[in-house]
Image (tube, rainbow, N blue to C red; front, top):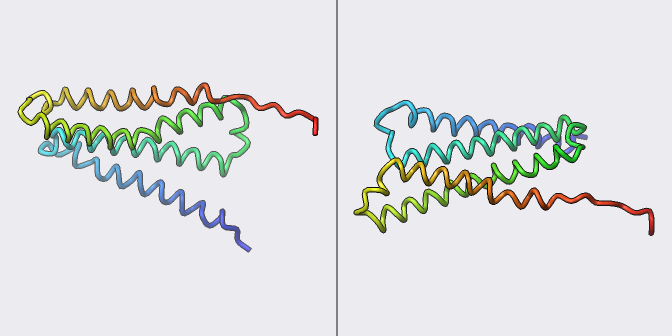
Length: 152
């Protein structure tokens, strides 16, 4: 009898690969066609890059944990996996939040030219990636060793 995990593993890998490919396909016209180089599409590129980073991390983590479970036994790899899982997973919602902040500021401050420039976009994107790294720092302190005693 076939177990459920043997059925789900190829489906999950296919889902990750299709998501990565679709994000890359969506990125190609934005990066190559000059008329798409505007402020809103820069935020779209950032969202696609964050999604690709998240999918690549989770795909590699999934493959590593299912096909090479002996590689993830030491504390250093667990620490790195937990930290990067939080960093890359947080980038997608943070990218959506920064798009909302940009839209809000472009509506509220529609007469201010600063919010229409690429400098504002770069500041937003840098703040998003820095915030993702900083907000993941508590994950460093949350890793504690657990000791088991022989007492019952």
